[in-house]
Image 1: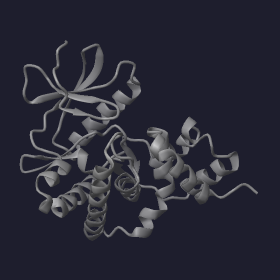
Image 2: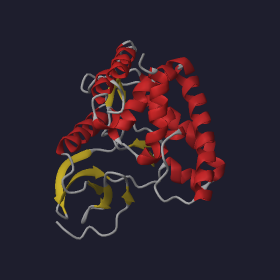
Image 3: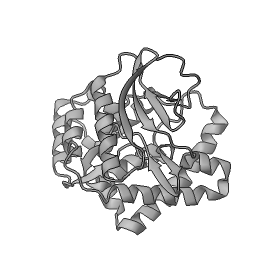
Length: 274
């Protein structure tokens, strides 16, 4: 199939288009040559999220369009929490609290389907973006990760307000490609990283970056307060997962604008060789 028209959304790894002939479906189209294992992982994770009622968006399998492979999903007809807050800045804190409520709901669900987050983070230490670590530093990192608590909850690990949409009377969580299993604190630690440290879209003008960073600080503080109120999560539990969150972020998206800061942080956390 060709002629999908203009993209509805553009991300770092895929574009989303309306599916021709059916206004209730979209296709998430990956670049030619994209790792098929990652596509399969997102397909399986999306199906599990739908089965567990963590999101009302169903995945309808793989399709080919414009010479590339994509996944067919139910279309969400409302805006993301980010867009809702942009339209009405007075709702910014309400959207952040909704983000926390949706995240707490995800963490209510036990699963045995996904890889343990500790296993994934340990494996990530051997990927190319982490090659700057010395062998003793990698060994220390592996010990720190191994000592973290086990868990059986669904972890989204890309949970932010661009991935949570209004849908009917509730919310829809999308983009399940990075899903793992474990302690919910690991997922919260990744959301903290995304809202505090992740690079904004490349090319964003300086004034817009400054405004976005101020907004993200409000969202992060409101999200954390609401999530902790709902779940009893502590700052100490979240902080314990900072190292694996950085490792997973670097191994998944080695972004030039983030690289130097994360390298310095890991070097500080792991110490110099003696």
